[in-house]
Image (cartoon, rainbow, N blue to C red; front, side, top):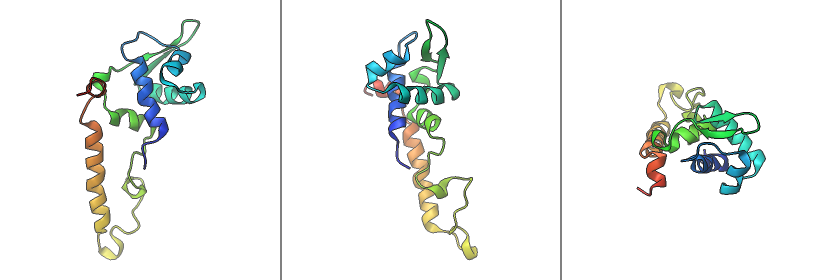
Length: 135
């Protein structure tokens, strides 16, 4: 799994909303150079995960539901791509065809599990506020 452009842009959306009461989609798009259709798709996922809040009506728009010091890259990336696995066989919903075949564990699978956990831990090590502050 690669970190997708959609995940990268989701962090940009949060950066635009940080410190703001409410922004329209067009304001977010202008600040972060994102197209409106892409922004709407991202905002829908962020809203579903509880990271942003949407407001309807003439004075509608979006605001953060969680502050940057309350979330990490892992939170944002997994909201956009719940299957945040480096390879398909890391997904607990999928069976690794080689792991346990003929009673023999797949040692590559075991090593990739450790790498997967380290990847997630790296994404969780700093809050978005720390990243935006350059810490």
